[in-house]
Amino acid sequence: DAGVTQSPTHLIKTRGQQVTLRCSPISGHKSVSWYQQVLGQGPQFIFQYYEKEERGRGNFPDRFSARQFPNYSSELNVNALLLGDSALYLCASSPQGTGSGNTIYFGEGSWLTVV
Amino acid sequence: AQSVSQHNHHVILSEAASLELGCNYSYGGTVNLFWYVQYPGQHLQLLLKYFSGDPLVKGIKGFEAEFIKSKFSFNLRKPSVQWSDTAEYFCATGTASKLTFGTGTRLQVTL
Image (cartoon, rainbow over all chains, first blue to last red; front, side, top):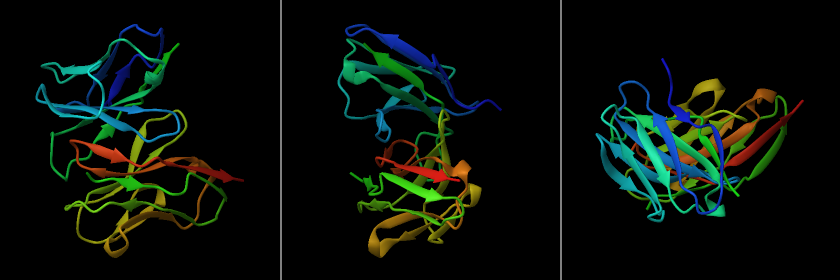
């Protein structure tokens, strides 16, 4: 079975531009989460979507937005890019949105470089 | 909010040496704890998890961790490391809704 897939794998953007990152969860998983991993740090939670609704938001500015589609895939959008947005963006999926027993599975990430 | 801290930022070991990576968590009611590994160029993989029950948790690739409530710790151990264990290791807490990660420990295993 395919794991969590993300696209693109690498991209370079200029300050002020906008970027869209895409994620396809594992088949049957209804929850998608997004994390930002800056070099040398652990992943930081950005959003969680379950059944197409936002269920959680981390401490990120409104320039960051996301949505989940009927097929449970998801997009992360970042507007007005700053140099500090350069990071690995990770998508994760889990069968359900909540519950201690659920394990989340990560994709390989999208490397974003802002110049 | 629950959080975890990892005090070892970079660890260098020779092959066959024993490994122990520290992780301390902040108390916040129900404690769910995880160890993830990130091999160079690969995605985060779950090594093991603790939700409740037996405090000694065995994971994949010969790793284990012990939940010690009195010390607020969940240290990762392996009796004998291999060169292929070279990777970044992250302790985390939370649920499928939201995970909070530590800053990570970079493990370098030399031949």
